Amino acid sequence: MVLDAPLHCTNLDSADRIPADQLVGSLVVVNIRERAAANPDCRLTIDDIKKWEKKYERIPVGAVVAMFSGWDAHVSDPRKFLGLDDKGAYHLPGFSLEVVQFLHERRKVKGIATDTLNLDAAAAGDFPVHHYWLGQNKWGLENLANLGEGPPKGATIVVGSPKIAGCTGGPSRVLALV
Image 1 (cartoon, rainbow, N blue to C red):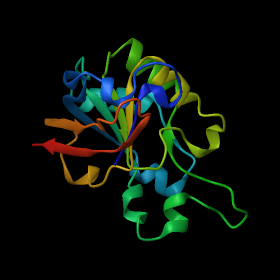
Image 2: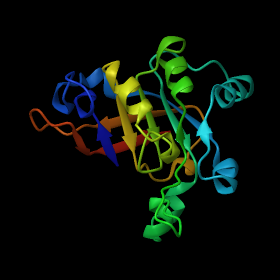
Image 3: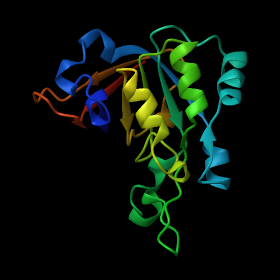
């Protein structure tokens, strides 16, 4: 698992400056695995969030929202995990810019997470999710494993952020307490 600190794309907090209370929260897992299998360029949308909330509950303030695309199942196939097609183009699911704006402004979540290499969908191009999300002095996690093994709600996530002064992120220990 890799943490992207705000400093990754901004001049805001480095990983060692993220307060510990911002690295623990309710874990919300939104499953888009079927869509990602059919279209690796798909994105987590506000509609996905609304469907999750209709089924479970409103996302709590201070939660961490994880996109489960099933991508961790491809880790043993580097080409598939990277999302490379025959022409060398990348295809990976990710968050839409609109959904991270919604999660920040309307749901006040602490962090976002994904089981892919990137918070952004590969088709997004210029990393709009990274720039917006990290620009709010928030963090994101990439390459999470086993998101499909836990519950969609009810777990607590604990992120062991790198403590190297001034780092933009890096490998992290992440626990989901059920």
